[in-house]
Amino acid sequence: MSRTLQEWLSLLEQRHPKEIDMGLARVSAVRDRMGLQYDCPVIMVGGTNGKGSTCAMLESILLQAGYRVGLYSKPHFLDFNERARINGENCSDAQLVDAFEKVETARADTSLTYFEFTTLAICRLLADAQLDVVILEVGLGGRLDAVNVVDADVSIVTSIDIDHVDYLGDTRELIGFEKAGIFRPGKVAVCSDPAPPQSLIDHAEKTGADLWLFGRDFNYNGDKQQWNYGGRNQRRNSLGYPSLRGANQLLNASAVLAALEALKDRLPVGAQEVRSGLVMVELPGRFQVLPGRPSIILDVAHNPHAAAALAQNLDNMGFHPYTYAVFGSMLDKDIDGVLAHMGAKVDHWLVTDLPLPRAATAQQLEEKLRASGALNEAEKTVSCFTSPEEAYRSAVSKAGENDRIVVFGSFLTVAGAMRARRAR
Image (cartoon, rainbow, N blue to C red; front, side, top):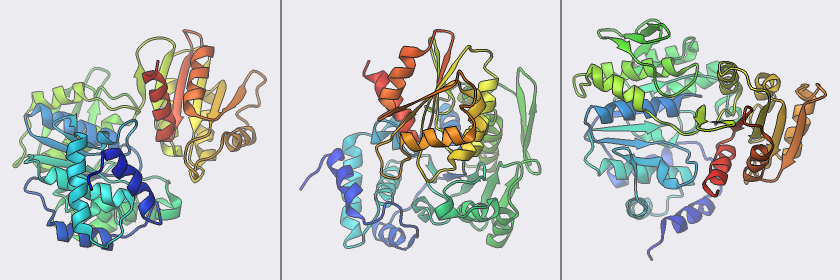
């Protein structure tokens, strides 16, 4: 029986008893039955924050260099097709359905989660697409993430911070070990965290990976106009800043250039192609400032590390009379830690329910806001909404043209605002 893409996704959401089921045994067994392997270099990107930006810069630069590029990233905002890209374009429903059918044939009686099944399908699609390079974004952690059934030629770990504590642990050392699980013997492992946990360094050494550390093996410097990259054996000077906004983008960009340096014999990239790729890169929902007034910022900051970066980026924007925040979050996130960074930046909060059982309710978010002291000043307000679309429309109706609206938290919060804008 043939199914549409939407029918497949609905089926996969219901089929496996757990949404997250850590471990690689089942995925590896199906991978082997599929004969899944790559004939081109594979770059794998993990980390707590910065994965999406790093993947987007890699894709943009390599496309500028004329390569056929495949990208698997997640989650999506509006359409599942966003997760699978070939040459900068989302894959079609037909391509995805064909890949789903191949996984279904190979899995036999092996039960797979939604994420495991779709990961295998997209990896199959990219393996069959006669590409020059494949970029794979890790989902949760690294060591036990379904993407890790693929062996990467270069692995990148961006930042290590506290997130997904129920699965990865509650210290940077424990999380660093999980992230380092994507490293491979004899292959380059890039880490752009300026203070990596010792567990990551130790695991790289034990694995036999060739570890490139920021500040030791590669670095950057610059002024307000341009910046320079320095690696083990390659320098790139007079680079323009990436078009992605934010305080950490040069850390991400330097990790990208380290990975490309490691692959320079297989995927040579010229100086102008790097410059063009950095200038042309786009990525929705990562300190994305929309055109027009009031200023509208979309950011998927959902943990304290990302919230600190968002707060810093907001400070760098200049004066706005009032800041409205549309905020929704999963309940298992460190919401108190997020509010500690964002509480002082916001005048009017519009907190929202999200359409998942594990999401915090708007009332729970209001309670945390009150407990945090973020509403202690008389003119500060909080309103509760049943959907991010409703909250976003309310913010737009209230904000003056010189104010700003920040939509942040879960991907579902930002996706709701995107849907509301698309419906206008």
